[in-house]
Image (tube, rainbow, N blue to C red; front, side, top):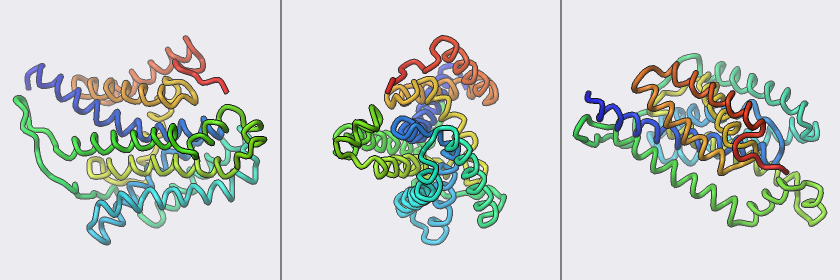
Length: 287
């Protein structure tokens, strides 16, 4: 392949992976911004989305049904975890870190016991190729990019144009004042935790025809999401989206021209550089 073809391939791979990462990282940033909870189990909601998608498509053959059912199921798990684990410990920062580590292991072991240790494929719902001058590119990956863009736009409208989003932003700014003005803070916490899980699960459903479903696939998603949140600014949704796209483009370029391992090392170095220069990220939100 010519250098020009490699550059185009790197750009396409970077945009697709960056948009999927943005969808996952947006959920993590939303949970931290609204609840001040560092959700170590966030990557496993990504994994649950992929595993639920495998079950639904295997049972019904319908990928659109999986795209609807998987995020709802992941959100239901998140709401149960909020009610049974996070709320009883008062959403205190340190205990919630320990609690979400425990949730991570519970989810992984539950899926390992029921689903098994094997990676399982999900067929692409649409299979076609786009012929470019240098190579043929997967049409499904372009569909993933378009769907992720639409979902990010819908999430953005929900957060910025609805009453629920207004309550979330008010709670993010000051919990006590929001509660004094009648905002049901605990319900908003539950909604943010459920929405964050649903966004991660949607990303898992979109990516599973490309990467297969596996019970450990959430670890990589968690690491990259944390990188996006840290680089973009803790609690900054716009910064998280921009950072996710940046990481995706860097990852795509280095993976095509060099290796995926080098891409991870480069992303880690960027995180270290950002933390040294600005401990709260490039666009930190001070609440």
